[in-house]
Length: 297
Image (tube, rainbow, N blue to C red; front, side, top):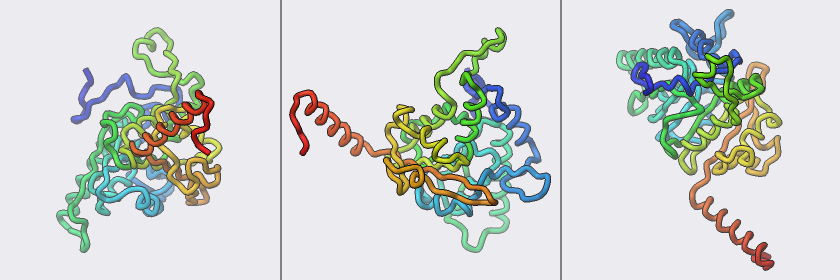
C-alpha cells in the first residue's frame, strides 16, 4: 500500500534511484528545503531555481500552444514560479508535479501567500478569479493522470534531467528495493527519458501539445522524440514549422538568454480521425503490395 504524504500517494519504489547527482531524491529535497530560492534569482551566491527561462520569455510559445481554459500540466516544477505566473494571468486549470516533497510543499506555501496578498490588495485588472495551481507530488515517469486528460504538457529542463540520468547510468538501472540489500540492481531496458516522454504523450488529449524547453540541440534530442525508437510516441507529430519531416534547423525554435541558447520542441498529439485515416491508407497500400495491384497512381 502506498504511503500518503501531505495528502498525496507516494510510491517510493517507482522514484528514480541512480548514481547520478540529479537522480538523487536527497539532492533535490536538500535543494528545495525550507527557505530555498523560489523562482529566479540574480543575486550572487543565490541558487536560481527558474530553469532556463521564465514566463516573460516563454509567453509567446505558451500562447501559441495552449489557451487559458486548457488543462496545463508542468513536469518537474521544482520551485519554478511558472505555474504561479500562468494562474495570475488567467490560466484556470494549471497543475504542476515534482517528486520532491519539499518542492511541492514550498510551492503550496508560496501559492497560499499569493492568494492572501490577492485578497488584501486586489489588482486593478484582475483575472476573473484568483486561480490556484494544483501542486502534486508525483514521479514524471509514472504519473497517475488518466489517459487523454491534459491539453498541454510543459517540460522545462525535466527532459534534460532524465537524459542526464541516462547518460550517467550506463546500465539504465531501475531501482529494486530488495536488490540494494544484495548489493545489485536490476537492469531496466528503457531509459528515464523514454518513460517520461511516453507518459507525457499518454496523458495528452488528441490535439494537445507537449512543449519542451531544453539545452539539447536537435542532434541530441530529436531521436528521443522519434516514434520509431519509442512506440509510446506514435500518436504525436512535430507541431513546429519544420513539420514531421522537418530537418534539424526547422524542427525546433531557439531561445537565447544570458549568452546561452536553449531549444524549444513542440509535438501535437494526433486526433483519432487522422490516426484512422493513416491506418486505412496503410492497409490499402499493404493490400496493393500483397496483390500486386497498384491502388494509387
